[in-house]
Length: 317
Ligand SMILES: Nc1ncnc2c1ncn2[C@@H]1O[C@H](COP(=O)(O)OP(=O)(O)OP(=O)(O)O)[C@@H](O)[C@H]1O
Image (cartoon, rainbow, N blue to C red):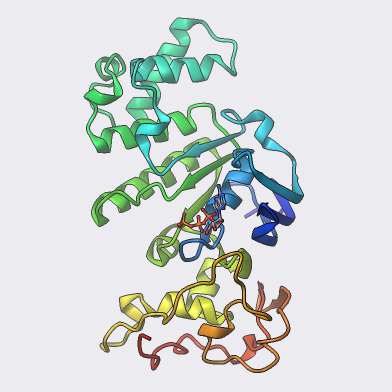
């Protein structure tokens, strides 16, 4: 995989009224890779993804850099697959017209050519009788078909980066897997990188090349998914993995005790220390900075002592 960056994020901070929700993230998105942003609710995954797209809420203040700024080319070089497929489609225009309009907004093609591209895109995502379905409105599509249409919309202009923000939360497990597989195939077909926001470690394992594990607005661990998921170096990663059935070894599934802190109420030192079985006085006073270890970057004073079994013996609080 080429290692030059398509996007470079450096010391990204996102605050609301002086309370930081994202606190100094640095990572790259590489060409054609699937980079998963993973962590519990409130970790700052969506805000980070939205910052890439230039779609932050108006009252957010940011610092740091995202280079190049693809958000000026949103819809062409960077696109979004949102949580809710309906919100990505207008209810008042046929789906094919919306796809054709998306094409014509960035390419000089005739209406007829745009229309043909729209039908081809719907066909590519597995919509049966695409020429006819292109004339239907979103409400005439089933939920699954709408998901497919949204993926067609996000890939039709062959972007460099597709950002998918929990694209499957509303779906059952089987559908989730289908949608992620389709998203993977489509982004591969157009040569785009995928930034996949998820709280599902199973999805990360099945679909990501690299993973950025986030906790309380910071980076816990960043590295190749195959390494991070088999040999975590951040206690928080081990905690997320503990809830996956294959690591429970026949025992009752351990869960990560406690909840993440709210952005305005962070403990001193490492934000994860109150939930961490390895925490020492240093962890409770000194915030760990990202450092290289075992081919990834990890923010933990005790990273060398972390094993995948760390949470096996911990009972839910
Ligand atoms: N519009 C907003 N105004 C104020 N605070 C916000 C706003 N949006 C997000 N936040 C704060 O930022 C934190 C991180 O939000 P974000 O949506 O990025 O989390 P997430 O990791 O994507 O979680 P989830 O999985 O629940 O979507 C939230 O817990 C919240 O405190």
